[in-house]
Length: 235
Image (tube, rainbow, N blue to C red; front, side):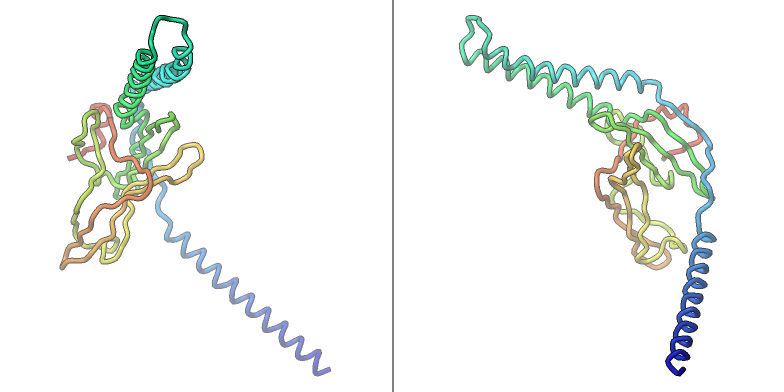
């Protein structure tokens, strides 16, 4: 009888603990929902006019690079009055030229933005930019606040993400030890995060300062035709 009462008491206490855990979990979930950010509002959509041209040029460069590698063995066995040094020179010239042109096309086209979304989130303006990797995979870079963008000092780029030392007024979201993410780059198809820019603020009186840092392979430079994106103002 005593054993049954003890088991009943344990079951009751276990039930109360489960109810308490459920109540706490519900409060946590409610708190998280209440703290969620507002839904981004689309302000403007931009499409790069040269996106298709860049893609075709990149495909052509890959084709020429593949052809250069494919023709190299043929040059070595070609029945022609060319000595070994001459054959090596021809192969080296073909490969070097093709590799260099492919690298140049990639460097020139890497910042090119094929599409862009200007978003409004609360009192902030953010941008979502679509670029391409070396293998033409689409990358999505989300700059959380356009105040982090500035004029680019790189050729064939319009905007760049700020780097180096920065400072700002101390606010609730920017205080000593707070880590603020500036921008993130994702694979568009898989959604996998591949890199981000961030700062860790240090308080200095009424202001905070930090050094912009990055992790992974995050994009920094962007080539945009600004006359078609008047809603974004970059200093």
